[in-house]
Length: 427
Ligand SMILES: Cc1cc2nc3c(=O)[nH]c(=O)nc-3n(C[C@H](O)[C@H](O)[C@H](O)COP(=O)(O)OP(=O)(O)OC[C@H]3O[C@@H](n4cnc5c(N)ncnc54)[C@H](O)[C@@H]3O)c2cc1C
Image 1 (cartoon, rainbow, N blue to C red):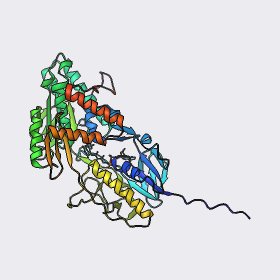
Image 2 (cartoon, rainbow, N blue to C red):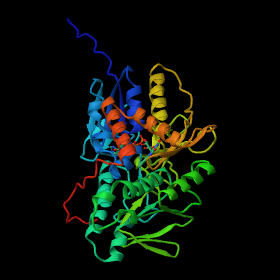
Image 3 (spheres, helix red, strand yellow):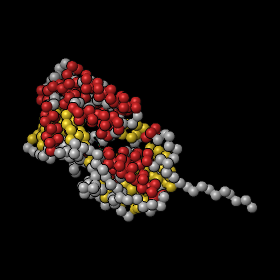
């Protein structure tokens, strides 16, 4: 009697949901481990969100800050990439459910589904004040900004023209500050020679913040410097005023009603639905409260990382929702999975803060490295080099560096394209 040779054991199945900073880092760091990986994302590309505002303000093209996930993992035969939307998790049967009805089985699951905008209970504001999270958001904002100038060029009524040339950004965190500075420069330095009937210097850029200062996460002196620099660029900074209405006509804040045709929301985020999928504990922003080893309470086989979770850092404060934190967590989870497969028990996740950076216009930035704080032109160069370093691929690094040098030297923003519609398209 002959017997079949014993089959090699099935590799441990790791399913990673989300190919953002956290999920992609976990996938990279699992290279060489005895696992098969299924990476699921509802978008076909990994997106470098920190530079989204540069697409929205016509400085960079979409392809310079996003890469097909499939392409990034083409050399990893153990990784299967699925272009699909996850709609739930059956933790009993250990399956991820897809929106189109499919399911994917896992032995270990990593949830890295990020966050989205939050309108603090006013979702009806979204059509008037879109946020910036995806490439589509960025090209939508770019279209709105450029269309506002185009319409102003043909508008004869001074009040309507003023509303078209008023740009309001709600929220003065890094994204709000970066958007405000760049739109001001677009109007002041790039666009003037292109128009005949309007002086684009007349554009108003208004940055509204409910808190007492811009860049609240930075030390006070850097916040004050950022505010002064924005004001030097002509940005009107309004502090301590919450927006109470957004509409097609403009915004209301405090007792003020400001007519503006372009509103941009940069004020709040809400975590993905990962906590809801598992009925797991979450904070007010919907962030899943993970254990110190980044597993979901009651589910030792499910990790959750990045913007969709809340976990305390070494100072007891929540780890910030930034790219380096998501990447550190992705790295930690990959190391934990490998350790578990060796029969070891991994220690808790320890976050190391590497610094905070924000750009203010094309020649200034602020950087907080803890003991070292930088501002001005030197900070801008470090900001630029750091961002180019973190981009993927030599071609993109060269192309982004060239685009920035061109803007720096010539004020030319090459991506001034109105896509997604003709001149008939409104908001
Ligand atoms: C405009 C903007 C500017 C920023 N600037 C900076 C900055 O300057 N510096 C910095 O450090 N951080 C910055 N951040 C924050 C940083 O981008 C995030 O902290 C980081 O992306 C979090 O990584 P993540 O992996 O948790 O989520 P993400 O990178 O958001 O990735 C989540 C992934 O999950 C996918 N996904 C979500 N839901 C599903 C689902 N149901 N099914 C399938 N796939 C799903 C998404 O498509 C996405 O690819 C910025 C963010 C934004 C929006």
